[in-house]
Image (cartoon, rainbow, N blue to C red; front, side):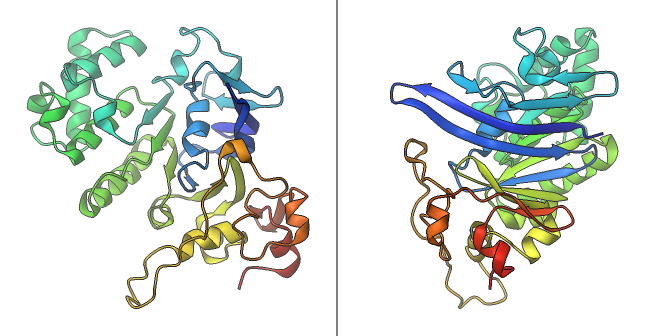
Length: 331
């Protein structure tokens, strides 16, 4: 049984301009001990999808009746979208589900020490004393590789380097021993050496705690090192998903190939970067048919009129593209 099962998730926002679709009929699963990479450009709907798993989207968010988010824990099955009160939502907001945000400085309160915030969170989710919570917090800071953890525990976020703040955020997210960890671009603001350390740390934590992880990023290079499976999002839709090896070695959607072509090639420094032409459309102006057809190099007339269904390529590898479904993989 999957740790997390998302089916037909459609999310719209009420605005003065009307309903805006941010997530469109998204389905995926995450198993315990597995990393699912969620990939796409800014504006693809990755973070909105992740926040839906904890019902953290604003009050103007509207979920379709068909949407389903099911969290399967050892002792219970939770229908996330049916939860309404703050008390009911505790298990999916820092308890069994934790989230690492992209910028720790925006997540830590600047006038409260790192330790105070960690202790407050632990006491909110577990029936333990303040001294026990302090001990767990210091131990977790130490385990994520922060030196002199008892000293850092008393410091404020602005006193720590970027890498240490990110590690402190990871320690805070893991202190409740969650079953599912959502990491929203946790390495984007870090230099490459700290990036590698954070990726190695997350691998160690999976091995130790057996948790499931949703790793959100725009960087397929990071996903190749981190994830077991990958789902590629564009304008609120998952256009391709499968094992990392299948998706990266044999991309079956033009958007996935575009993301791969945009990566720098260290073995051939003379090769120019190949960006995807055009810009991602505004959610207010969603194209009819395949949402990628306005930027697609192999688009046909049918792509402008009809929405392609998922086609099985091999094993769990699926993609939604008319052209590659009939002509094989992209050249």
